[in-house]
Amino acid sequence: MRLLQLCRLPILGIGLLILMAIGFTIQLLGTHFQKRPPQTFTVLHPLSSLSTRTCQPKSHIVFLKTHKTAGSTILNMLHRYGDRNSLTFALPQKYQFNYPNLFHVRRVKGYNEVNKSTYDILCHHMRFNLPEVRKLMPTDSFYFTILRDPATLAESSFSYYRLVSSAFKKSPNFKAFIVHPSHYYKPGERSNHYAHNLLWFDLGFNPDTPFKESLAKAGARAVEGAFHLVLLSEYFDESMVLLKEELCWDLDDVVTFKLNTREASTPLEKREIDRLRAWNALDWYLYVYFNHTFWEKVERFGRERMDTEVRRLRERRHQLAEICLEGLNPVRADQIKEEGIKPFQFGQDKILGWAVKKDLEPKTRARCVQMVTPELQYKDILDLRQFPQGVRGSEPGPAETSGKLLKS
Ligand SMILES: *[C@@H]1O[C@H](CO)[C@@H](O)[C@H](O)[C@H]1NC(C)=O
Ligand SMILES: *[C@@H]1O[C@H](CO)[C@@H](O)[C@H](O)[C@H]1NC(C)=O
Image (cartoon, rainbow, N blue to C red; front, side, top):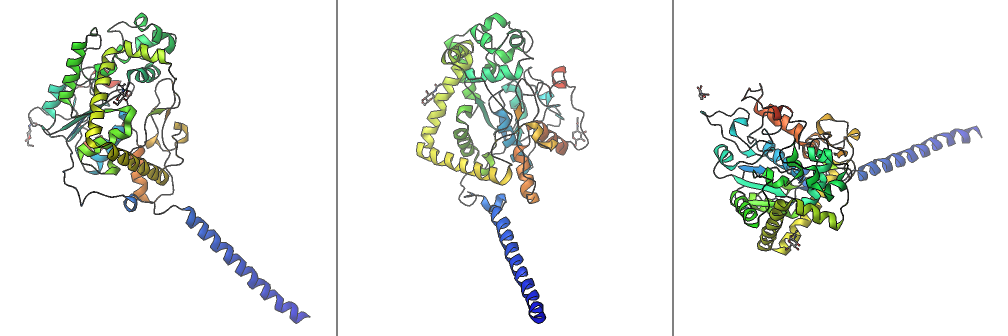
């Protein structure tokens, strides 16, 4: 009897051990399977065209970052590309080139008239001024910019610059502004460029010139002459495909997560859209003009090819989101613990950002973080790299001193 009991104990023990081993294995396998396939960029890097490439990737780039047009997302792409390839940025003293004044080379940090530095990328907020930009940038630079339907642009601008622009400030709300913009708007009043033909203004023209088709057409032609490519926010992915083609870049170079998005936007009625387009008639003319040239380019590129490329881009974005991000939707700033990737808050609505997974292999995490680093923080990183001791350039103007405030 005792012998039997003695015998049973070890059997029980072994049984328990086996059970524990099985449990442990299941757990191990479980966590193993939970982890998605190799969490690195390189392994997943699809169809790198390096071997088949017949073009030379472009690295001399001028991007006119217009306001409220997804420019922050494009800036991230340019920052990343320049960062990875050790390119030199023409940087502002603070965060913008003395906007809303016209761009001038003396606003470039460290610029020296005598010993001309050479720059690869110029992309921070400015009011465009072609002769000055040409003085600064290599002659073979690729120029591009991005436009948006002035109706939705106005909605975004109102939300963001509500307390900055005098016209917006005077209006009780956006609906009232739409009904009678000229009632609140006086040319030249504080930051009123945000309230009237903002694209036209950013491109360096006078937004208060009364609309005439001949004038609008001359403006559009001038833009066409200065820029190799004009993108559209509404067709962001198609835009990225065209850009990738023109720059001869890889797919991963143009994959982005939307940055600087708002939590909510006000939907517009048809009549309101029409009113806003009429109020911003110069911008609307530009938009229709470049919508036309955009789809001509898509036609030349090939519709089917475009569809395929857009699908690849979206798949890759989704893949990278799963590798990098906590959740597939952007989150509020207070849910992002790292200062380096917190979005700058400005305007009436919450500006969203992305949280990056913690448990990533360091190299992968670094690339994920790059992809969601907002423009202000990324500019600081690049600035520190280019000016490790800090450089006293020309005097910053008053608008630049408050550049961080009027960031976007
Ligand atoms: C230009 O560069 C040379 C060589 O680096 C330097 O000796 C000279 O002082 C510079 N001149 C100016 C005006 O910065
Ligand atoms: C833009 O072009 C497309 C394709 O030609 C057309 O369907 C669309 O109506 C155009 N949009 C505007 C705002 O002109």
